[in-house]
Image (cartoon, rainbow, N blue to C red; front, side, top):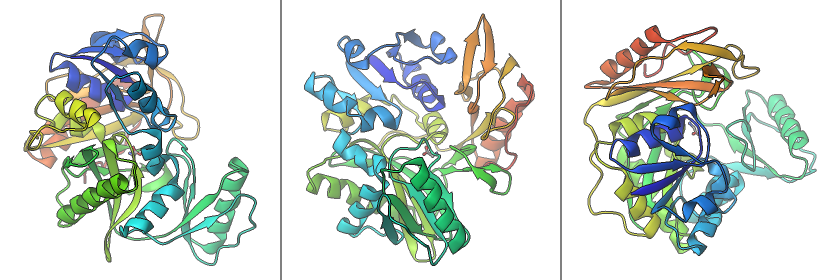
Length: 392
Ligand code: GLY
């Protein structure tokens, strides 16, 4: 199949790796040094490049929210991802919360502070910017004062937007991703992201410092049912969801509750999930895009996979740039996915953010974890840093 892949981060490197090993011809709209070995980079308007392909796979949320899938549909080109209306599940956190309320899906209680409203919190909450914020628009607050201050900060950042305050729940989180054709879903193994910068879940929130899958939790079946109800709800409201729906769950003492939806693969959850996906993903992506998933479920490896994110010194506040002198050797089941890298005059550089995702598979979670961490021994760049407790 000829496939156009939109996006150039670690998630898209993992998608490209999985598609390339099944013989698909890939064109990329964004640059990532790793893409040179996997296909052809032709940065430009995805709509123009898409005319020559059988399927467009869209990695990041921004083009989905901006209606790229709508435009591709109008041009008669199959695209894996939701329309702008369905992407509101992520592009407006307030839409997502109100959707859960309309559909009776369990979710933390919430308050909406309108633009310009003077608000004083009476309890600790989780404050969220309403629009897309590249993983940076969330403040987990420990007191009413912190919550009030976070609302002010959010209002200063986006004076014209409403702010969401969510009830703070306790429990473990689970990322459950489902491929949907608008009606039927297939759920991928439950995954867990580690969002805080430092070991022991300390420090600032990041896009994610590592992920593991599967995560065996007793609530899995209940979460899968909620994902099915979410997709049915979107169809009933006239916005069928086609693509990959990411349910961010809190496994709270009250039961699983939906903290948020994302409308694309998680990053870094995608990296271990692609490594566990044991067959060609393209028919599933095409089936979702065209409204008819293949029968059955995708073949998933029965081991486990772990992704350890490597970032540069100073991440997330002010990540330093540094030349990368050595990368781990890729193997069939251990791959160094590139995210924040650039090739400058022949030299590979770490250029900020999350730089690499060292991802390995193993027969057990312990083996996957050990193999992912073993890759750090082959890595050489100054200031490289990672958490030591991914998957524990
Ligand atoms: N890993 C969290 C996200 O992709 O939003």
